[in-house]
Image 1 (tube, rainbow, N blue to C red):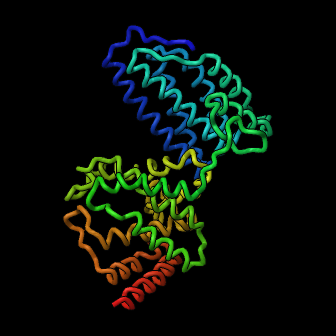
Image 2: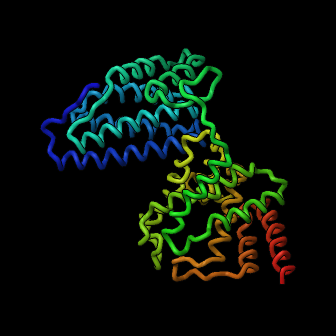
Image 3: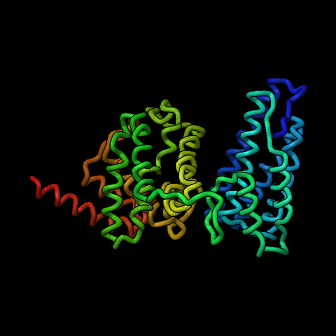
Length: 367
């Protein structure tokens, strides 16, 4: 292992650059998540390229030379993507994300300890592999990227026909679902408005899905119901519980929770479908939602179900907003129907109506 030592950098200058580097790293993460949905989006690719280019420039100002050449190779790969000479895919996304995580980790260590240890041979091997990704050898890209990923992180388990360097995981989807449910308990405990929210929404979501012939995989929908608001647990409670109208920057901060929640499933390939539901559950059928402004046909069915149960739960339970009125079930159902075709999917609202009628009939039978 080699060690890089910082010299002649003022602490306040380093701190300012560190803040910028963290913002750039987070922008790269967001871009990579969005690109999984729209892999041919040139503007997203260019935004990612600019962010990596700026990170490289900042490291140049700090004279952190071991990482500059490494980032230069990443930048060259991104340039090929921007020019349409190679194509974005999930495995390349993993490689870019893991590479940027490594760089970010080195920078944090550098700030905390005045330097960092790094495996120079490892970086050189990855650089050599990145240099082999060219427009004229697309058939080799998958193997090159796979090799680069395993060079950066030897314990990764990758899908494919060849033997993995690590034994496959023996966990079952049911084990993951138990984990997600338990994981959300302390998140729900952070606010008195959230208790029991996941289980309430899950019950209705599964019922809606069954009335539509179980068009959405139940495991994936269950996972999405549990974790779609995971990111809310990391936002300031003074903003989440604010009585008055949110400022623009506060609203934008809250909207980032979809990325944080989706990120939870980023390295769990089995749950990719659930991740897309989580990422899209605040999209609206008329294109006015976030984070991507998708329209009806572009939104996954699971996300459309989540949007309905999320809206219904907000209507029928207490919230922090002083202007919020808790609605009776029948009135909330009527309001959901008024949103069909604009915010919510008409097809899934029809299934919601059937599910709610069954629930209401069940409640009357118990009286």
